[in-house]
Length: 81
Image (cartoon, rainbow, N blue to C red; front, side, top):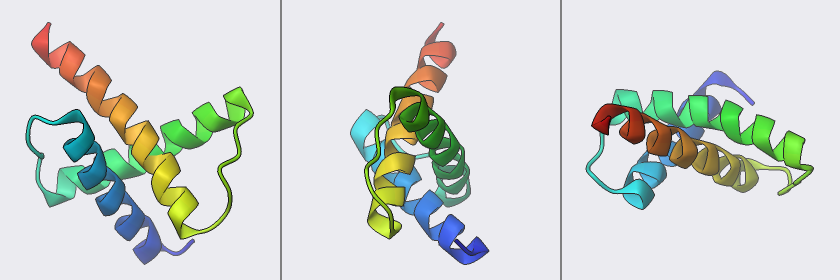
């Protein structure tokens, strides 16, 4: 994937994760960062669990969103503690 695709997937995944977790977004830049970090978390987690969603842009967005939701959940737990 190219750099622009990473940014697009990160932005979409970060925004979707913000909608799923609720509590307001962090802004476009942080949503992109959360989405990209979430992609790494989702990719690692799917490898560990042996789950293969598929190939392509949609599968990347789903994987990144799952990872971003996990990341936001952990960040909000830490923030509230």
